[in-house]
Image 1 (cartoon, helix red, strand yellow):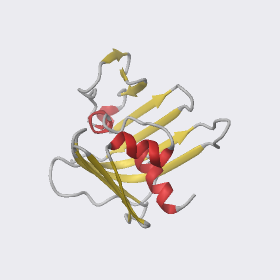
Image 2 (spheres, rainbow, N blue to C red):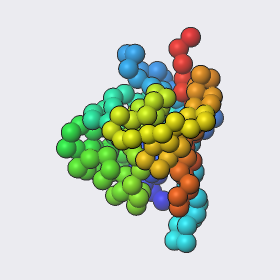
Image 3 (cartoon, rainbow, N blue to C red):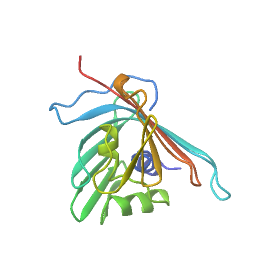
Image 4 (cartoon, rainbow, N blue to C red):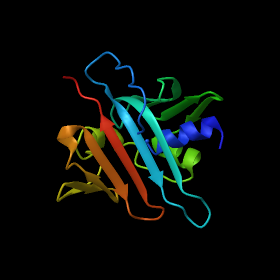
Length: 174
């Protein structure tokens, strides 16, 4: 898998490993931390797992997501606004109509990237119905676990094939 595809996959699966701390961008609206993503094997794809540091600002309509290596090097940058999503990596820039298309084209399946900024803030995305469950909520076929959110941990999982698990460790001020 090329570096650009790995970066796109990490971005789309939205993904946390041990390593050097990321530089915290200036401004209170940034979320930073580490992501890890595991996608179970299917009949046609082997199991995939990715990890990255991340810096995120914005919401479902417009924003920016930076993915970094454990040493803090920028691996991929996604920017989105109404009508466009742009993925920049070492092999250049790719443009998409929206985050859904970016996910489908880069990973081969749709992932709820529009909901991710809300979920990382510990809240349901306002663009779709959600249901409270013990320890979090369900939305768009995904379970968002908030049991350890006060400690900076978030776990998002989808049981439908291929099963996907995303874990985030958010950096907190203080």
